[in-house]
Image 1 (cartoon, protein in one colour):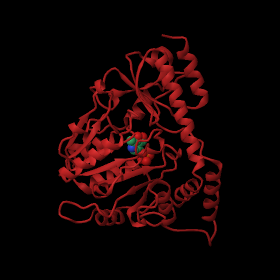
Image 2 (tube, protein in one colour; image 1 turned 45 degrees about the vertical axis):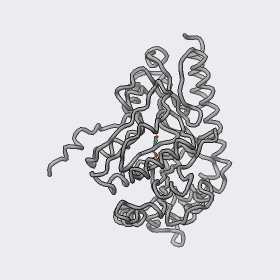
Image 3 (cartoon, helix red, strand yellow; image 1 turned 90 degrees about the vertical axis):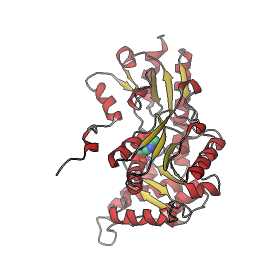
Image 4 (tube, protein in one colour; image 1 turned 30 degrees about the vertical axis):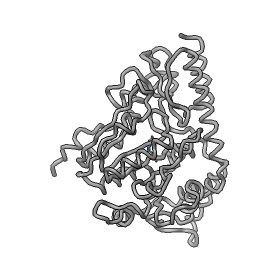
Length: 373
Ligand code: PLP
């Protein structure tokens, strides 16, 4: 069997693992590079996990394959908590991660779909398209404009991977910008795939969903995940909303195509993670507390960097911010950060700082930076 040329160049590890390796031989390194919630997961949710797991050890409680499209109870809770009940259960699909769903959509759209995204952005927007042989058109964010997405510069696309709040900038789009993106999708007869991975972190009045109006229901789908705000990255749980109004250019339904595609290629998400998700969404205060404490930490971190004279961007509506610097934090302070060049080679002189840091590590970072510069 011949190896496809387009997968030959793929790295064995992703950019996040690559940066961790950089510090692997060093002692006492504290990381501000990890985009992973350190947890813990609330006790109530863990109790549900244990109960559900125990039931598999009994004849009466054992269950086989879960429904491919997800538990109706979980879909209902997602619908209530994030969408005020606007969607039908058929329009919500439970999955094991946004990354999985991104590639599922990329595979479904195929190599002829021209795909665009604001760069720097989450690597799968580009890499997933490259694997299937689809053309990508990055729209570069301008540091001079504060890394704010410029909708005017968006060019025709079939699919646009939009991430608000964005990783790595931590910047969310406002209502006008999102509506302008929907207008673009209508004009180009394209589709927006909104990656809402970090939406629950939004602190201002910026929209937490792409579904702001009826037009959005025709030109957008949305992917949400429990990974970040619920610390479920090791549990795996996410969802996709595919409104019934979205049509391909020939008038056929995306929802119908997606349902068929999913059923042919997927056997659903573990009962355990889905049950944990249900418990969490029945007790929303549990994750709102997590979000508040992460965003308070982000504020403290930003203030420290600003106090030390650095220019910072983002970090108001998302758990990340950018710092303009050429200081080698790893060599100088044993603090690991993520260079923006890991996302896009042309962004020398910026690092991404993550607010996902434990109290203990934050104390260490503060003491190392406090008396420097
Ligand atoms: N989308 C963005 C923007 C991310 O930053 C990440 C993870 O870092 C993901 C998606 C992956 O999410 P999941 O764990 O749901 O696959």
